Image (cartoon, rainbow, N blue to C red; front, side, top):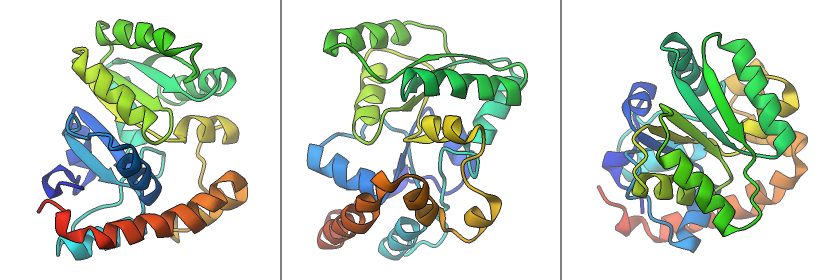
Length: 231
């Protein structure tokens, strides 16, 4: 399950880590079903209030902070640091139009940052392998991967195994959400009231089944397997 030592307690731990993914109940369910290893990830960030509360109960620890790769949480810090240091990064994910629009938004918002990218859709496995081999041998300081649960973790694992030395962040739907809204996805009052899941169901109806079906299934699985958590 989830190793307690891998969990980010705050944003600083996330920023200091080299390979990070952001877990919510849906991604935990899918990663468990696929038996995808998280051994290459230095830190696991807990993305969601309900999961934060659950793990706080499991580990008797209320210090776990909700951390998401979006503008309500860690993304600003990552891009601000990259802009200040004139770091170069690569954004992998979403469709061609959304990826391009996302990069333009980040360039406009964070002067000095150097970003390139491409969509998360490939002709075949060989096409993907060629890109990952090229990225692994590149000089990018960081790569942001938004390909959805399981696929983005598998891609991150492959980059590490192929020798990529920079930082890696998964980001779920952050790329297309940012492109869709032209910037910040969640209104401030939605974020403050922790109603992000409700907002997503309204904006993206395809997530309704995820919240109403997959989330309960995930918590059921987590509850049944509490004894296997690594403390």
